[in-house]
Length: 236
Image (cartoon, rainbow, N blue to C red; front, side, top):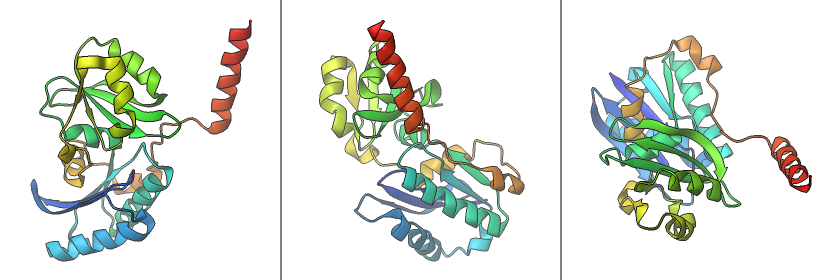
């Protein structure tokens, strides 16, 4: 079975082709090239180097978010277009879970972090090699996340290129319980995306029409309303 994986949820880009459980070719890059310009050419280059025609693909996997709104949308749009045109099933995997998979050999708590700006993050907590969900994907202020992690009273392994933005605060709150993966594990890999996708039951081709990104962030209007309610509650 031949899989194509597309990961564009954030600044890094990764695409991969896996045949029968073996990585045939993979591109992983973290350069200043917008996905609208670089993603589809990367897919075409990868297939050409792998000697695989698009019609030979059996399934497509894509990072469904959360992350950059534009990045997620571009990846999902490319994946949906290919899946529907080629009449192949499409599987979406959390971008946070893809990051966590880089640290799956760690036996404790794994916390992938994606910068959501203004000291907010997209995050989750998994545990062990089977990536058991401890805290599901969500959007939070870094202070809120660290409060939840500190309550675990255990070491937490952080993964993701955006950890640099928050590392000082993480160490300040978590102390010796804060651990990091090597920098070589901080970029998402489309091969890991495909590995996770192979564990999911393949949907029908018709399901491609109903596939939607998972942004995990409330609308700005709702966020402002919630903020106003909290302020009113404090005043009472």
